[in-house]
Image (cartoon, rainbow, N blue to C red; front, side, top):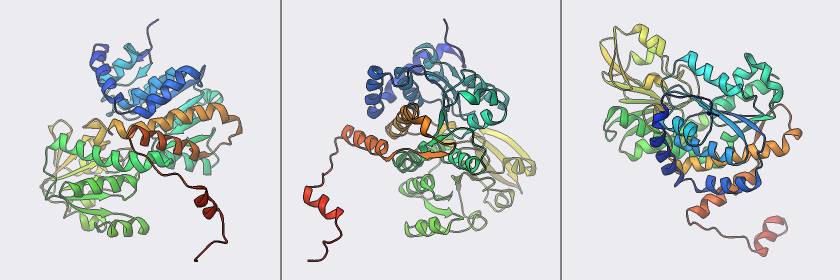
Length: 420
């Protein structure tokens, strides 16, 4: 029986399989989990609906879930992040249902989410909480089957915690994003590198000597600022949190409000998870030729409707670059304001996604074994799982660490010992 799907073209499957196999070379932790899952089948009979970026790294996760016995279906968590060849390969080569087409419109995007929900999931995997939101609004018919969910990104965790605080969350969710082996590495090193990669692929601009304005100094913002600085840029950070702002100052960056940064920047990158961080009032102050883009989950960080409405002229210059003439100045928007690292490039490197998706796989196993103990709220990934993933990653990199001696353990557990 053919695998259910809605992808661009199954003829792309061979190219997709080659890319999946290339990424797998850099994902040894997930491979170790997959080998164990094949033997133990901890997810046997479990339906998993995953709303994630359809990339080669995500493919590794889906293959691992299937190896564990799961009946898993995948849809896109962003209309522009799908790699069509990967989607085709998952369907044709691995027998995993996929509903995702790069550039799909909003109607198709939600249609695909609903097709994933149609498997009546026991576990949801989200990147931004759109699937969970759909379950809580238009697809409440499928909620009773759900044990729990997992959430991949900061934006989604924020939404889910707000739902939990309001008593609106109908099932428990594991905040995979908040595990140390996810946000310390994926958000900082993954987003930092892949965001600049997306900008460079879209524009071929020279970062050295440019002024790069980074909106937000969370883990993603830290990574973007560090990588831009490493490429020779002058980096300006905008923030609303005084703790993060002083940290940015002490890390060597200029910190100022967006209104003050607007005339200075050559490239603006938003990574806040909030709405309308760059507004028309800022765009009017920008220099001719300023480039703006977003690497936060949703394309709401830039007030694109207001910018387009104010523009006297709007046209596509090259793929992923839209020119808007505002106050006789050319402002360039990249990738329709969506995640520039995934829309204009390949997203995070496989090596860092290895830890993120190891968290997802082990969180699914944890949910199956423990969901009856959960309440309808947001949970952290157990520290034991976090430490296990870190240990496996270190081993794969050939790095070793010390172990405490009995004397050291005793010292750390005592209060009597002090200065001698």
